[in-house]
Image (cartoon, rainbow, N blue to C red; front, top):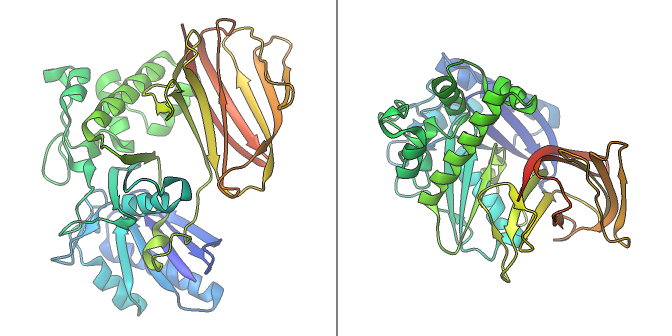
Length: 398
């Protein structure tokens, strides 16, 4: 058995995997925030309960939003103050009676994606995580690159660039103090707490991230405007970290820390099933992902594509549900599937049998829009078999 613990600023989650990297069990608890011994004991209790459940003592790997300094042995985790600058591996190994390893959570995420068959063409993979904080991880030629002390890839401690400062109003831009001692680190902007702080400073209201997102889906003007600004800021920052011949992958969370406890085999990975949506320029042989979820109905060079990774059979029943801003007619090739629309012609359901790719690990579909399709915001909801994904939104423009 392998135990992987995703150590976050909000929660700690343990997952148990067998030799085939099949997930057998998981447990999630809140992260203690004030007492180091309580933090250690929370992890120890999770591991001991798993030992008791499965009747064996297994290896333990931690995915942490920071790193353990390889020279001092101290954890540098500014998002988890209770464990920051503490010898967490020494203390946990002593309490559990076994070796405990740790790796940056973004490195774990990037390594898993780099080992995926479709991504092995890239010698360099950069993984970005937006959670309680903002983390980054480098994989070079299939191996994690941590650097001399373990800080390579910690892009969360780069500072706001020219583009972001311009969007935030130059001297009016809110400048936040970072736990690392610097100011204006990306960790305090492209993160859950940064999302909340920016909303407070830009919109004058104190709300949790969940409350802001709820307002966004309700169509609240202030929340919709803020989320648009936040996405533009995120995109502008991405310009400063673009890499040639590299794959850049972003995620809102990561729980792949079991990789730390494993031998280095590309087949030993757990795929987290989720929906990705993007607009691509397909004018060249290699499609190019565009910065915004906006597709032009007048351009034949753009397509809206969704993809879902997971574990599927060779064929899967796919249901795509679109909600359009006004009356519309959806058409697809008759040999692919069928379309049904609501009476007001605003909700359209496409059902089809789709071939999976990459040995059953990927399902993908792309759509085009034309002048007959109304402009405005659309939502898309996907169902593959019994699994449901979304909803996500995109915009059709002129």
